[in-house]
Length: 398
Image (cartoon, rainbow, N blue to C red; front, side):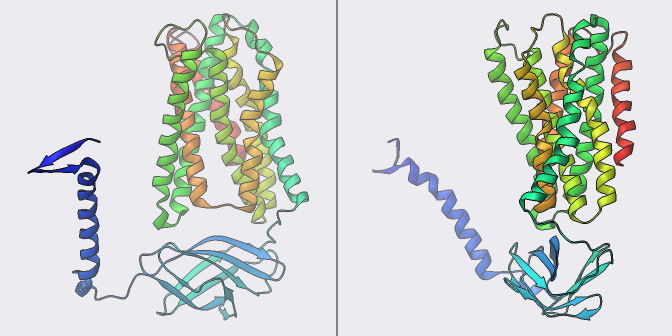
């Protein structure tokens, strides 16, 4: 073991490395014990509670709460629509970041608004408004099956339809192939903007103590770094690639595109599942039809890199895999949105999707740069056309 000399004694290296850790721990301990800022507090402690999930049951309302402030909070009373109600809770006193399930036997009416107010032991009132009350779906086999069918209709089937563009792309000349590759860039650029916007909105809805913006950034950076590592590994294995090359072949790029689109589609499933879980059936139906139309173009984006003349024709198993990677996450998103939606985890998921799509954009841009794709005759037109297609179909889900 490596050692250093201190006078005539030899001190192990691992022991000296603990000195800064012990010093930091001592500093924190002393500050907490002495607490020099305690005398500066002349106002009541800040109390905050985040309503992470509201579940309407046949015999009442269940709330999933989290202490969203720096100080302990004790729930003393509950008002529903300006009337006091009895309640039960797993814990009425919440420390920092602690959670509690609170149940109120309130006879709510379907389609009517509900205002819930929590009164803390210090007299602070924290309100939560539900615009339309509706029975929350139970995660039974029937409901899971319905949500899975919705995921198939939103993600899997439209993407599979879009993959049918492949024969036409194989017969297209180089100029039109560059057009479709540029169109793919436009499609994904719109998806990136949409994903970032959704992620930032969810970050704002996340409890402040969980720092939704950091969760979004963590997901994005993690996706970029993970895909960069995958890129190097796949490129090293790519047959006939030049030494040190990190440009994907057509099939690998198609899988990368499918992965990025799949993560985005999981977010779409979250939106539909959450809308249906809160009783917004009309909105859910509108979202389903809109996303189905919106996602048909994603299959075209996936197969665009496979249309190049030097690319071998993939087997049907590859097309099945590409469709599954891009579409099946929609089912998972619908389940999570319907039965376990949380703004914090949704912000993280959208961050991962944003990072993946950004990396895909970079890879496609590199793959067509040699052919001057974006500045070729039809390149700009393809990019604008892709963006406009997503914008117009996106109006159906706005």
